[in-house]
Length: 614
Image (cartoon, rainbow, N blue to C red; front, side):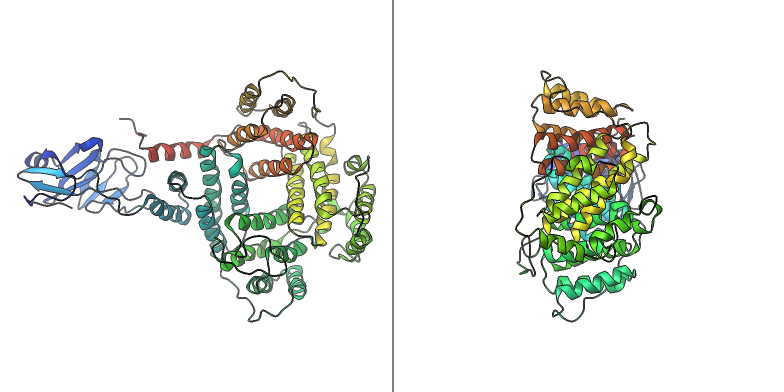
């Protein structure tokens, strides 16, 4: 605010320039108390703004003022001079400073109180970044929020709410990436947590850019429908690809207060009515939706049984739960069904083979339930040749081994862990002589198996046994991609006297050059052999991942590998997924690192550093 008053102003005003000199020259750069401020004399008023353009730090004292508008010369961001508000959402508002003119001297208060807390400002900017799909704004917002001490749960919740509301086609890769990055946060260095949050948010913004919003279907006006009936209705609607009817069933289950275990039963049963929907993405999406709600907090405070109590204080209310789960309906209803594909029918009819176990067809669970009943009270011990059988080229033997395991008391989570290990083996042994796109084939099986494993740890729905069998059949179909198998060092086969820190440094170097796939795997094995800290290894792999323009599959792969490592019970089993994901990363790196450049600019701007060099 400008003034011609000769009265002493309140606050810490500092004399900065002669008023006549400013009137003559039109502008001045002053630095009271070390704060760079651009002063302008325009239309008879004195205005003061932060000299750093909020977009990328160009000196606004070099800008142009006309008709009350200050224009930055670098990217042509425009600001209303008196209040600092921008015409361009990608630029942010520029800070203004109080001004007084006393006895021919211009005074400026370089330290006025902030209009609002930093966390509120960055939360608003995050919303703008999502709405406009502005990467630099998203980067500055995520960095700013975490620097302000905001719990990552808050921007994750906001992004989840945005993504499930503004994409008519429902849950997709961006939402899944957000879930993966959320799961990785605790495994990362502080700066890489900012990178991870930025990665998740920007991919949701990309997914929603230009998409139609989702208009909700209401729940039924009753809470008296049983879970069994809602599950039956939901499955029937998904079977005939009726998204609207399925959404009403699902929202009714949420409104009735069913807890996350019951809701998982409903969703995962439908997601396994056909084997390996959309190359495994559908079930993986569903699992990440539930894990995302775990991260932001369920209304009942955690694992629920047949119903939830709706306890207050969690980040996710019933509305967010309903919107998040409803976003899964379209992917479920439109999924490609593997039982309709040639690979699952010829030369071996895998669908018929599975139907012999499931019941009348692959959507049945009566056969599975009979096996589970037979194994009630039994304790399964893994046969010596079980893992070899899972990796064999005999699908009947694989199905028989799994069925026998269920009959002997093996639960779905235990078997899912075994199949996930087999799937990780396919990635770890992937032969680089194969076509590059075939990395996706073994990857899809691995992340599908991991999703089945995580889902089975959430709910004991019998239908998830079907997911175990389906994943095992996909492992079987991938067998030729391990012919010949790439070497996977066994414990003790690499150097054991090397400094683990040196190994981690060398591992990052493999990601800087193409073709170091086997070396990356060998270095991870060496890190285990030297007794290196696995948390440091995770931080190294996480940093290697997040400095790149990693694609959807690579981001998924690392997250699944970390989860499988954490759940494994022996060192041999823990090292396998880490070797696998290092090889996968090395196959897909290096990239242009465009996202890292944006993140670096955002970080430097938020610290007040100069980006523009005169």
